[in-house]
Length: 270
Figure 1 (cartoon, rainbow, N blue to C red):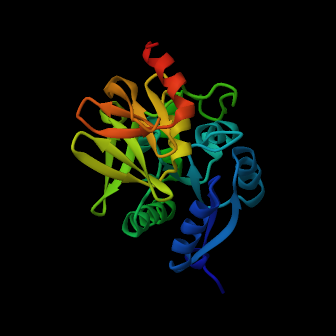
Figure 2 (figure 1 turned 180 degrees about the vertical axis):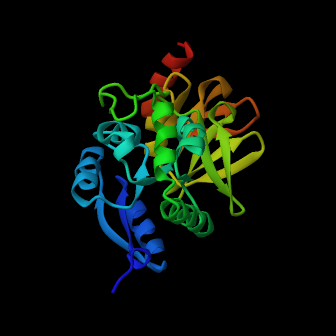
């Protein structure tokens, strides 16, 4: 006969990125007594899967199409949520809030050791039946009365654009304030952040970063470069008709011809 403690931990994975879902599933495949019962790629689908599958543990991405991670909690009702490990790339609100209100959180890109730590903590909380205490704290955080879900149309306020970017450096995670970034350059399929004399690799595509950076502060001058406008010192034109930008620290970056006029307009020059 199978005892209660021998039952597998039933896990639901919710993330809009296929590779992210696959990574979590691959890591779970190495663990004993774990069963992945489903996956979801949108907030609305996550709500449906939680109600249908009733998982023991949920890996929940903070930023998904349809409903955000917090809106999923609000829609289900924190008191009805399974044990939840939030997954986030940039959301500084989540980092602050989930540290005290969730079973755990993972910051992308996370390493195997950090994942295992979060899973062990979740198992322990579930075994000790501490999940209800954690959801009570989440209810308090969201200002939702016990037993009632807040309207999904009223998500907690958060910045529209990135304020911090999480990077991996020598196996450790570090948060880089966007206000310190001079420019971003392409590095293969991903990007590099340039902060003074330091460079940090970030596992995001240039297009994704461009969409998440404040356009009043940053401008994409070339397919391979996004520059902080107040770091620009001089616009240069070479004899062959090519253009470039010189930053205040002396760095020169290529400027696409079809972006020159817009950059001049943004800088207020004729």
